[in-house]
Length: 460
View 1 (tube, rainbow, N blue to C red):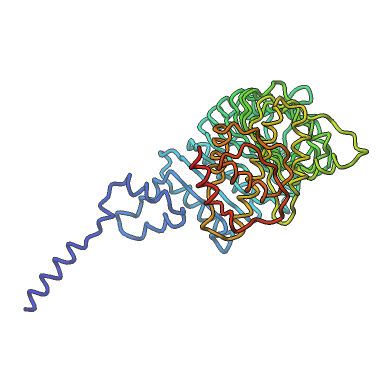
View 2: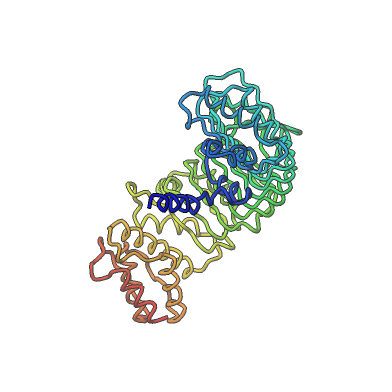
């Protein structure tokens, strides 16, 4: 009996073998790719099969917050880089150092990445309280790099001066934070013209050196651009000048509070989306719009709306005329829950912005109606009634289809609040040809969104 139990036990152990370790190296390395490098290295203690496997990793993630002491973090990174199989290319390196970093340590990490043909590189570092930092731009001449995110926190941005020209022929996506651009020729900084594959560019809290009068963003392939808080020099509130030479630009986001001066050498004929959040003077803002007149979808944040509203509400202000938006299809407005703008004020803003556009009255009214539908959806979602939550785009599509079907004259006078637009959609579903929107303060329980949607779908 005892022999039988021992035989059964041996059989169970045999059936309970380590199936994961029997997987091929490529499969195990693929699994380890989703682990933090610290945990991936720890697998070396599992068995002889795992002892050297981590040395073949192509994705490395180093984060100083995973270590109690900076010295331990440095020792770990140095150990991994020295022991890793140098014959294998490095696909992705994420390096986050949240405490003050030693220049030699950072330069060693960047040099290792470049020498091992890194493709995607993310560097977030802290340089506060360091005034002797020497940044060696190894990464800005890396021929294999396709993605680069360099975000720096420091007291003096002049410590991170970029080369006059970035020699990154394979780069497709670039994010730069807290760096300084220096002039090349004619008092102009033009760092991106040699990045022939660049499609996406994000500039955040960047600076112009005192020898540069303006920044030219020149790139024939660039399609997406974000400009977030630009400075003419070290934290001086001076209007920074940026010139766009980006004929294929389709998306532009501007977050600026220092009267950024924007111009373009081309008409940006492919521009699809523009998102603006600014407290700049309205005259500066209108000049932006003149550059961006070919946009299809335009979005304004609450700060931007307040700037426009304050200007058009001031009889003594000097107003510039908005451009003619020849391709505009959608005008969106982002509202802040605690700070609201009334529907009447929204109407005034829309009329001001579209006064010179090629849209006829019906199209302008419908654009405003769609915005009021957005307000309706937002209010319903905040009410907490999950049963009435429906997709905003779906509701608007239903309304547009209904308008085409009944050949409705659109809205004759948009004076109602969200209750008014709700009633408009309700009666439109019943094919009422004409309706006068009325001013009601609150939504009634008798008009749930699901019912509005149902009515519209029944009549389109």
